[in-house]
Image (cartoon, rainbow, N blue to C red; front, side, top):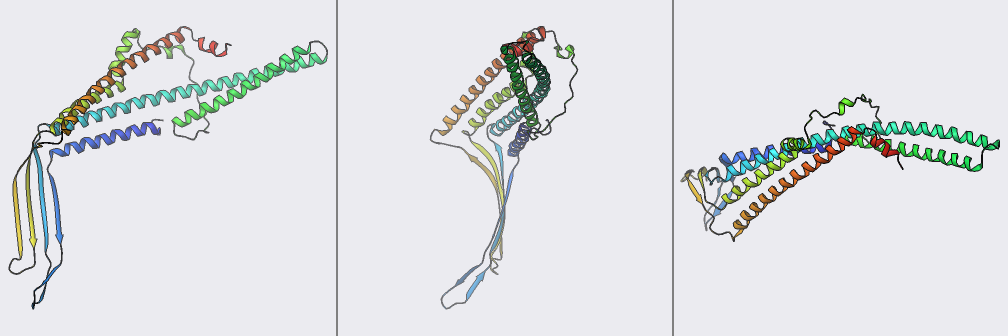
Amino acid sequence: GICTNPALNREYMSVKASEAEVGQSKAEYLPTVTASGSASVTGSKYEKGTYNKNYPYSGNIGLDWLLFDFGGRGARLERMKAYLSSAEFNYNTQLQETILAINNAYLKLLGAKEVLTSAKDSEKSYKKAYEESKRRYDLGLVALSDKLLAKTSYEQSKLTTVKAENSVKQAQGNLATLLHLSPDTSFNLMTPPKDKDITELETSEGVEKLMELALEQRPELKSKESSVTAAKENISAVRSTTLPTLSATGSAGYGDSWRKSNPYQVSTSAGLRLSAPLFTGFADTYKVAAAEYQYRQAQYGLDETKDSIKNEVWASYQDYQKIHSFPHLDLLAQYSP
């Protein structure tokens, strides 16, 4: 399942995409170099003159290097690093969910097969009881109601067997889907040992300590924390777009017109460029405000996740206590009216 589960592989591709975006942000610290060139054929003819052809061509290399932008590119890099961290924790979350889902599907399939075996045994018993009741009725030893009651029980047992067979097929399909196999795949599973010790928690701490442990280790919570960090860095990145930037520029070019008087031309330039936004129709103000609201939204999302995790640990702990104290309680509830 870890190798083939599509949902897990999708999260892994998200991690790789975030890694590439971090590399893209690091590229802002390096200069950009561009090359351009042109070639053409031109002709001219003056009155009573000859027709002249020219074949001018030129090439140019330009350099642009951002020197200072009030921490904008640094904030963008830290933002992408936080997004990468969030993607990695999302992958860890999906990994644990995949393992848990496969474990549950495995046990549900084993349980469904056991129920089917029990249902088939019950069907044989009810069939035998019905045949015996029918024989006794033919001999006049029991009333017709006894025979009909035995027949009804037998028919109900056959329906129970059909339902159990359907449950096995559904459980097989669920497990096969998690393994990225065809739903009609059949499995011959090994039954785990029936040892009560394997269901014991490795810690004797109370539920409060378990909730604290979950808040420290749950990857989905760490993913939310990384999202909060990214939203905070995004505020600095957006604010930097409202401030000036200083860049170094340079270029070198060569041109040739194929003329004897001016056969070629070489040009070079170097300098600094200062760029400052003066008025953008208040767009920058709204962008900063949106980034601040998104940061607060991420904080509320983090608080919501904390509450959800604590409630999940609380509910799971109560279920564990119930099943561990009364291991046959669920089984009795399953067969109770």
